[in-house]
Length: 101
Length: 468
Image (cartoon, rainbow over all chains, first blue to last red; front, top):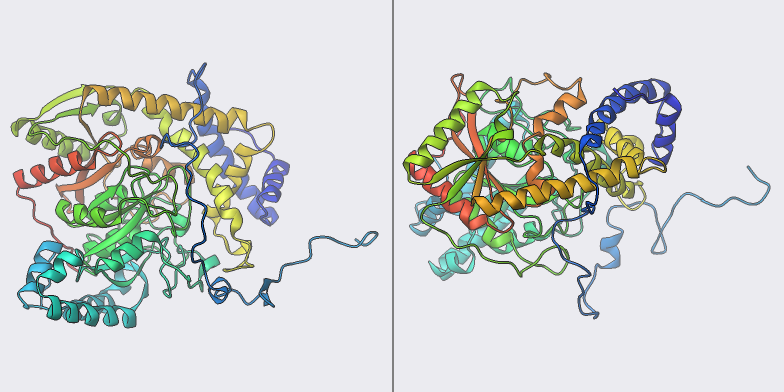
């Protein structure tokens, strides 16, 4: 089993935009460590001079004609939210005024 | 009233006016209402829309007669879609509390094409939340039970799709297969399940799990039905640029050369599963096909590569769920989604990218090369779908890694993007379904279908449904 610290779990949780409590951190630390320990076995495979594969279709730069075509109606786009104001989505404030915490 | 179990028989009954589409909807919805409490395979029933479509179909049949069955090749086919497929106006949850109240404003290409071909949507099937799981137990709306024995899992992640079909709640179902999520439940519930070639069926409008692996497929009770659905769902739609119409059609031969990859029959394969496949191999030989042993030595690394690539893609795909434009916030993710998102963030994070993600993508290349080489020697491969028969509910839930290893034989097809069909072959001593998978080179679906149909004819296979 690979070792993983509580701090590392808290760090990946932050990267993942997930909020975890202490109990969850301890639980996930054990579970993630066991999976990471398992996938480490890939180090046994010789991949010298092997190119990575990110997809299997072999297609490169698929192009289509750039043209006007029908899209969603405004009301369809906002169908599933109550965070609507004048055809914009209302989101939490990201930037804060200078000096304010 | 009894309803036919295949598309062909259903449409013959409709043609002869022995039955109409409204009768079919009556039958299935009644059966769901009476029995699904035990199985928990259906999350949403779209009753009104189903009857509306059934009446429309009945009118078409009245007006057009037999021509209706040519113009609408799936007319009268009642379908339940996996809840990963967006269905316009019908709640779509991915079996997650995050999307509990989400009603899409458009339909997935697969759904849309099946609709236009005459299908009647009855509702949406339960599944492991976000398609993360191998048993159906990860649903935020409770686990699905195996209709053949309620103490056992139906397999996942398309758990409800397979269980609903085995329960005769509909005629066909759809599913997604990222690492066995169609083939495993098909195998555990005794139905046929197709994972098509990556790039044959559009992923548009299907909730993304791991985009380089996700394949849109379906379940049916025999190979003929599987073929009929694929005829409708396959091909470019202009919305998924990985879907190609330029590929080499394979020539169907009378006799094929079938490879038995020895790494799929090693330690850890349950005796009864092994014996059943050996029996199938004997059948193929008796039918005149040539069977040879082949090697895929890197098979043991496939699931490890998968558990890096998939979480990496999951962490990116699930980043869009922010609770603003639709759905609820990220606190509503269940444990399995959280595990995979974090695992993905970890293998992609600075300092670990090369050691994990890049390495896994290279191992993927090694596995693909090996698979391509094997298909220089043989036409198709036969392999078990899972190392074991269906397992009991709760047996693997406390150990995520143990659950992940259920899919050890599924990963190869997804990593290499090749098609694989899981078909039933019979039942175990204690009445649980048995079967195997047939894999072929990319876009060799017709060769797989041909052999699978011949096999079912040879063993005189008849579709059966579980007694509820």
